[in-house]
Length: 139
Image 1 (cartoon, rainbow, N blue to C red):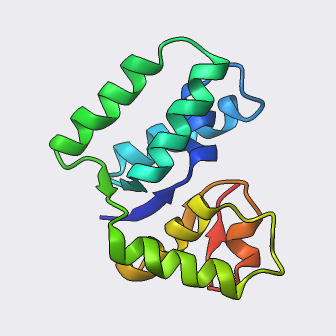
Image 2: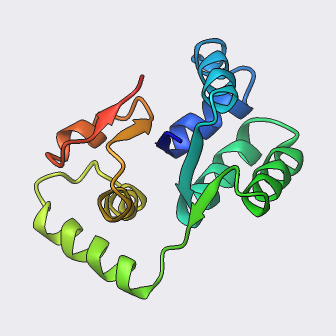
């Protein structure tokens, strides 16, 4: 089973029909799931996704409820940002003070990706590759 980290960018592109990349990302997502791929994300990413989708589209409740239901059925893995992960992300953030454009949510995502051994992210965010941690963005 292939695991890919799903960033906020990916979830928004999937859920928001008017997103510039929706028509490109949705077929990827459907194929990924069909091939038994498992999206991995975090509670912080989902929080950020909810905020962005609420500002841009309707149907957020249905989308997030479906994601939570999929997580209960182990079709999506939602990693929690606990105190230890938060502290690691904060340390990483301080070490990368020269990269002020990288969000704290991204640093928490990088920590999770390192811990669970995922190198690919459903994102177009160049910070994933610029982090120098061997990550590859898929769009």
